[in-house]
Length: 69
Image (cartoon, rainbow, N blue to C red; front, side, top):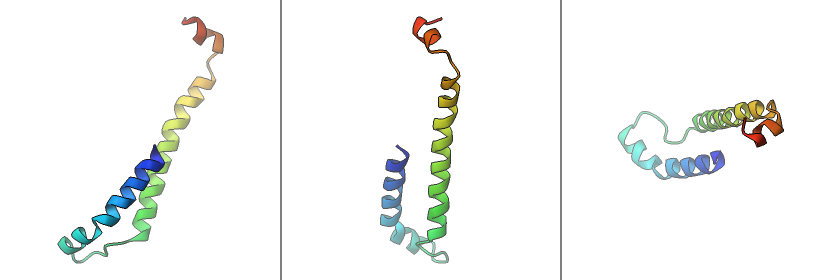
């Protein structure tokens, strides 16, 4: 899901780059550093969102979950 979101986000941002570049003339339209920081931020959040619940689930006894206690 994160990879799909990153791919769609990059595609849309590259497509809208010219419109934003015309409105805000002072800043460069394509900044690889900003893209890298945004991608790493999204990946860090996605990994954290997946690791925390899986770590908690690994501490639960499987038979307790199957019994529904």
